Length: 293
Image (tube, rainbow, N blue to C red):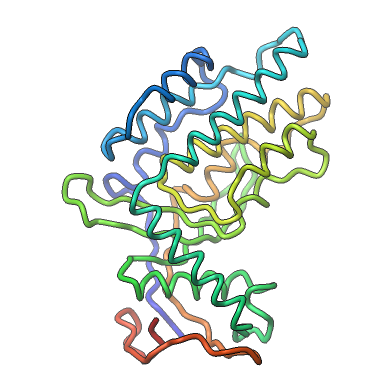
């Protein structure tokens, strides 16, 4: 079924205009220990300064600089990465919590119901695109401006070309904050897994949620932590870090300058288990009748 499809360059205020201001790993950095303690001493983040505090907290030391390879220094690095990751994921807003709860409940019901999508495959097991469409539909039914997003980017001297599909919610309920974009990635942990990674890196990846729901600033912070760790991991193994593992490439997956948002909905059917509760309604985007949670 066709749905609304909008190509958004993300030049809107408070959405993507801050992407170029994100700090990358090759820039000068402050002391990591100072940032950790400063972060832990801070109280609740106000919505207007949340991204700023996260970025200040995440001024990581440049792993490109030569170090002595001291065992204690290496141990301290990985401990700091775990602390930073935990602190970044632990702090969450009420908006993120509500969206996360709806997304996880939808996934749970889909798995229990044995939903089969129009592709003829079990949605929860193998059909990522239909699964995202169903979860996004649940979020819209709950009153959120949710869509499936597809970013595409061309190759550059820094990164190869590519594309990525995920979900988002754009919230404009607060006139003071303006539009707030929340990224939803259903397979977040797998995006950072590496075949030849060290045990320290693998343990850090295990600290990631399988389903990530977070504002742009939080995503930027998490990606920065993991890419810094990936760089450290490959350096310790004396291996080259692929450009698709670098921070700029990883952020482009979700925060690319050109993004197409779509609310199209695939046909669904149920397996042998119980049917999900889905009363009928009219899709405001397409004008066609569809199921509504």
